Structure formats: C-alpha cells, structure tokens
Image 1 (cartoon, rainbow, N blue to C red):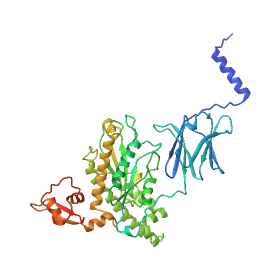
Image 2: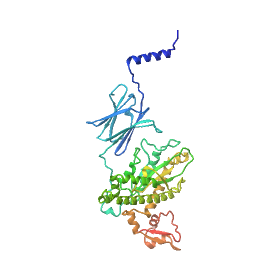
Image 3: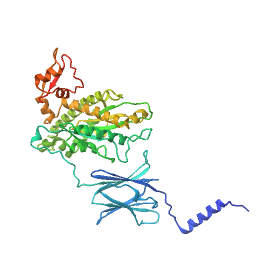
Image 4: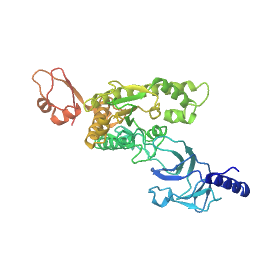
Length: 444
C-alpha cells in the first residue's frame, strides 16, 4: 500500500473542500499606505499597494463622496493616522464592502470636484499605486492686474519652478536626499531675493510638497504673464563621479515641434497672440499671419533664454564647479512655452556624495540662489522688458566712459548721486574702476 505524507494529505483535503464548496476568495492585494498631497487648487491621494489594483468607483452627492472598491484586498490599513491638510478632502474611511474579498474606500469631499483615477506601476522608490487626482474647477489663479500707473513701470514677473514634488521625489541621492526638497529650498531663497528687489515680482509654481505636472508649469507662468520661467533642479547619474551645475534651454527641434502643436490648437495660439487674436480670423488665408507672429514670439523667447542662461552660468561658476560651461539644449516639458523665456538650472549632482552634502547645506543653497538671482538681475538690467520699471530706469540713466584720474567718488560728486547707487547700477563689488570702462550713471 502506498503511504502519503501529512503535507500531501493536507493538500488533498484542501482540494476536496475547494471542489465541494465552490470558489474561495483569497486577498491578493494589500493597502500599505496612503499619502495625501494638497496644493492650493488640487489634491492628489496615493494609495500604496502590494500588487496591481483591480478597482471600480462611483460618486455620491449630499454630501459629496467618491467611493472606490478594490478587489482582493483586506481592510487592514488605518486611514486615521494619515496626515491630511487638503481643503478638498474631509476624510478617508472604510465602508461596507460589496463582497467579502474586497474593500470599499470612501473619500469624503468638501465640495463637487473634478476627479481622475488611475493606477501606476512600480517606479523607484514606490511600488504599485492607485492615484486619485482631485481638482477644484471653481478655484481661480491670481492674475496680474496692471493699473494705470503701472502700465509703463510694471514689475518684471519671474516665475520660479521648484522641480518635482509630492509623490514625485525626483532624483534620490546616495545619502537618501530627495531632489524635490533641495529644489524647493533653493527656490524659496531665490523668491526671497527677488521680492527684496524693487521692480521685480516672484511667483512660485509650488510652495509646498505637492505634485504639479511638468506641462502645467509653463501654463501657470502664462497665467501670471511671466517675463521669465526659471526651473530649479538637481542632476543625477548612475555613477557618483559626475558633478557641477549647468543651465538648459529648449532645443530648436523641440521648439519647432511645440510650435506645430500650438498651431493645431486655436485656443492656445489665441492666448499667445493676446490682442492680435481679436482681429486674426482662424481661416486658411490668414493663418500665415498667426504663424509669423508665433515664429517671432518663439525666436524672441529662445534668444532671450539663451542670453539669460549665459548670465546665470557666469555667476554660478563663482560658487560651484560647472558641469557644462555653455547653455545646453534639450527636449524638456517645463521649457516648452513658445512665448515665455524659460531656463532650467541644474544646481549640481545629487548622485555625487560631496555635492549631495552641499545641496543639503542651508548656506550653500543660499549661495546658489544668490548666483541665479545675480544672473537674472544682470540680464534684465541690460535687457529689461518693455513697459517695465527697469526699462524706464534704463531710459533715464546716463553712461560715462572712465578717463584717467577719475574715481567713483569723483563721478558721484560730478553727477550728484551716491557711490553706492553707481555700484548697484553696474553690479560692482569694488570701488576700483579702470580707464575706458563704461559706467551707467543712475538718476538717483
């Protein structure tokens, strides 16, 4: 007689039970965590899962709720421990599931919002995820309003974009540093410097740890009527050796591609054309005019971006090693605004242990922010946008070519201005001047 081991007997018994009582549901997935990323007008909820989710959802009103059913998942995670600072999400809780093998998650909402639900595959440092994006369509982005007095002396608007954010950490250093934290730290310091400078205005694309699509960042710059979009990032590579900063602009190949896309969308080229769109009809025989205007806008944007990036590089080189000493061109989504000069600053390699340490040092972040600010300031001092206060100042300023025996104090007496004013107008760090040097002499 053949003998069977205990494990074999167990297997046979389980098989008989399964055949006798029909299919048995086993939980194959697990909710391992929940992260809530609020921004001023949107909120992203990210459910971390052990496996690819199978889900369905529906909405309810009075009060507003989003109900999500996830198959083959037990009710084990405690949502009450999750930090929630969202203005759109009141609470996340469980409800009675539709069957014993699934879980029902209810997101209580403060108002009726737009919803987008999708699954994401594992991407380091995260595994499988179920993402819920909530958007408040009634929220308005603050607009720049020019009053009668500011029409000829408006502020130069600089939109500062801290790269990555929310569940998108960006590159991760060998010491565990997240690029999203480094970029926000430098961006806030740059914002502070710009706010202190008369005639400049700073706007942040994100002010906290939340996600914004790369394609939406230039849209925010346009809504604020930006004169410049500067995106802050930290580079990374597969080996720890590469180091140094660099500045990137949009490649011409990508620029031409984007221009074609803009032309295909009437509402977008209308935004670009502004007042001109009111007289240009979207007809075959008049589209050439829109094309010409957009070509000029793109050309101006790319030229300005390249010139400004050279100024930023010259100042970055004073505080850190340069990975690239000339502006680099690439196909980067955040730079794809045809009408707004845009640059992306890689402040260093977070994958390099020494630079990772520096990028986490507050004083070093301040130096980087100062160098970026100095480059921006140098550019707009020499090429201020039309109708800006700095353009008005430039038209009012005089120039003087230094002759033998002349000094800053002598010129200050002659033109009845302060030495400090002359130094500031010329970005001078010393009182020494050289023969033949051309100085800008401010009016006050």
